[in-house]
Length: 484
Image 1: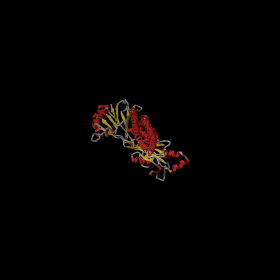
Image 2: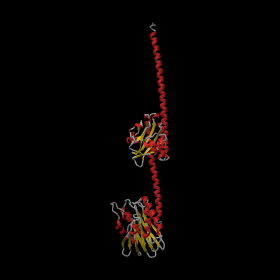
Image 3: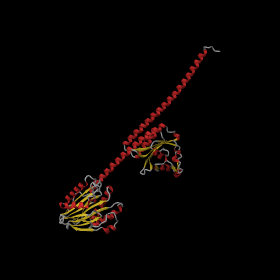
Image 4: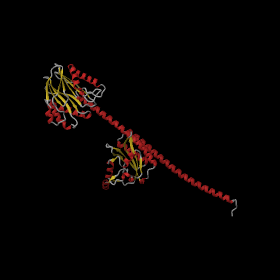
């Protein structure tokens, strides 16, 4: 039996041994924990660095004004690296907002949509069939995991795509073991599309931290895509405005740059567009034997389409006028040339007169246009000239030729003709009341004796006074022909 003093000694030794063992275990556990913390810290530091590079590359890309496909590629490949995904894709809402269309799909991205069985069968014979289907197929915006993401309006994690309710359709098979992170692309409260990154299950699951990082990257991507679209639309708008201004300048050059010198007559004309591009025009055409053509025309509609049709009409009339003695014959030829190319909802009204510098006579033709006003100097009265005629582009030929007729008149010294488009008659005051033909005729009657230039100037002044600060709704074109 040990001595009594040995018992406390042995107990102390045993306690020391146990304490030392416990200390060693605790130290080992702490070292493991520190190792895990260092590993996690290094991983987080690496992830933060990847995120920094992604945001840097994204900002640099936006400054270079990339194409939508290029920006999509930068976003997808950048986020793939940040969260260590196998691949990803961006789908945007197309011109039909009921469908999403792929903007960019990375090479190693697993399929994110169901594959129809017929595509699967073709892919067994030709692997390119599957890739072609994925890169070209539209996806319903309210179906599948993309539709789920858009309806949720927030980033989502789908751990197992093939077991998602979206793929319970027997006609649309999904067989891969894939997990996906998805985020809606929204800007200014508007849905633009969906961003997605994917891993095979063999790559490991996405962590909660991966999801938070992806959600943040998705928000930054939405902001970048939205701003890039605004910037691109602004550039496109500026380019279109520049093109329209250039077109307007070309159109201005097509109008007469000076008034013609015709023995026995004095002529003045003016065109006031309602927009940058005018659908009205007037022109002077020198003919043989001291004769001169004067034309005014109005294309239905406004803007670029009307301006293009106006240029076609001008070119066509100039090409045929010199070989036609009759205004009706000339406009008949123009109608035959233009009719095949005029849309069903468009037409051209025109008034064309041929002045004879020797006799003072005028032959008039009116193709569905406003009546020409004739001021008689001797009686101080105004007559409305309405020779019958059909607008250009309404009929291909036979009806136009049967209806449209010439009218011959002889002007006396002091007489004056006024050609005008319907923008004059239809000009409105603040109360919506039109200027009207009667007011136009009275203004013309009062001022016609003052000469062609003055009559146009005074008529424009009265129009401005009548309409006030109202918006000019239609092009206004005026031509005055004064007999000396």
